[in-house]
Image (cartoon, rainbow, N blue to C red; front, side, top):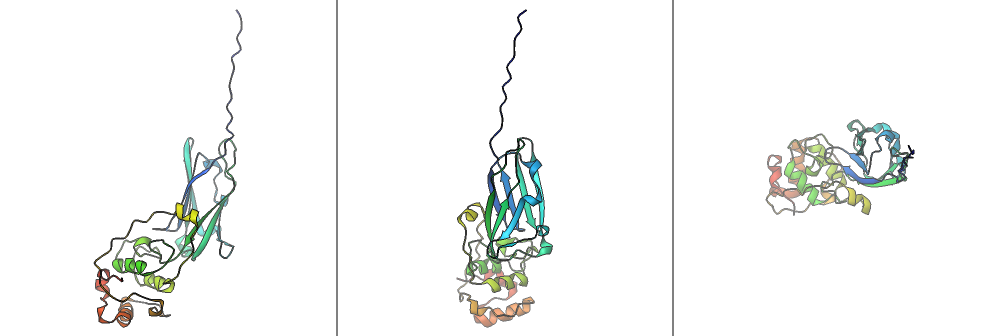
Amino acid sequence: MQGRVLGVQLILDTTPPTLSNATFDYLTAQTVRFTFGEDVLASLAAGDFIVTNTDTNVVVPAGEFTFSATGGSGVASIATLTHNSSAEILADGHYGVAISNVSDAAGNPLAPTNWPFFVLAADANHNHTVDSIDFNILAANFGLAPRDFSQGDFNYNTTVDTIDFNLLANNFGKSILGDASAIAHSAAVAPAVRPQTVAVATPTVAMFGAEPIVNENSLDELLNYSYGASWQTTAAFGSLIVI
């Protein structure tokens, strides 16, 4: 009987993994989320992600984030870094997340990657500027819960209150330049529903004093002083829109 030699063809994986999607999810927390093009779960660790404020060149301590990863064989891996509420909110500015030491099951490394995003407190519609649009969003939701960042909850306590008003007052008129790649990957924010328009003066930086608002009564006093009798009380805050 003539023997036969069976050939075995080996296919080696030499294709490096890629970052297929990245988002800064800022609606209910400050979270950066990375989706990879294949299974890299075994290689993922918190130390693979370094977050730096690129305006100040200061690295955000790793302990301020909670790291998690999901995925498995044949499934795209997802890595998530959520900034802890105990560390307060990230300071305004531009950030970069440096990603390294990530590899797939075959040992192919991900090319070193730096993904940018920006933070601007009270920028409810995430358009790089704190202006009357953001003021109107806060006004429409003042005193309501649960709410998210796009609805005026700028400190992530689920309620729109005087703390959020103070954050907006402190940043009113402030803009931050954007990065094209960060804009492309940022989480989408649904447009706010605009209540009925009331014609009043547009707020300016000069209308916001240096002293923080500590309760709703003092907020009423400030708004009545700035806008006169046309301003509504906080009980009817949601009906007022600045145009």
